[in-house]
Length: 138
Image 1 (cartoon, rainbow, N blue to C red):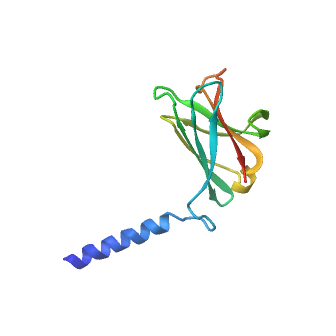
Image 2 (cartoon, rainbow, N blue to C red):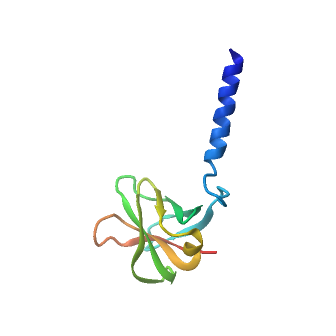
Image 3 (tube, rainbow, N blue to C red):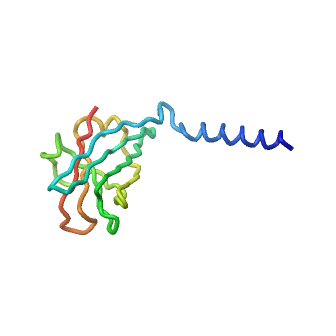
C-alpha cells in the first residue's frame, strides 16, 4: 500500500516541477521593477514580468490600496512616468486588493525596452487620477 502512495507523490512532484516552467527560456524568476506613489497616494509596490514566448505575464502588487474598490492598471508608452504618450498601449486586469495578474501580447524584451510604464489609477471609472507608476527598463 505504501508503494502506490509514494508513486503518486513522486508523480505529483514531477508534474509541479514541469508546470513551474512551461515556456522555453523562462527561468520562472521574472523581471521585477518598482512602482512608486503618485499624488501622495501612499501606493507602492512592484510590477513583475514573466516571459511567455511572444506574450508576457504581468503581475502588479501594491501596498496601501483600498480593499473596497477596483483600480485600473494600464501600460503606456513613454520614456518615464512624467512623460507618457497618448493612449494606453495595453490594458491590464483591474487591481483588486492590491493585485493584478494579466497577460499581454508583447514579448518581455519589448516591454523592458525603456519605452513603457505601468500606471495605476484611483478607480476603474472615467476621470480617475493616477496613484502609482513604474518605469519598465532593462
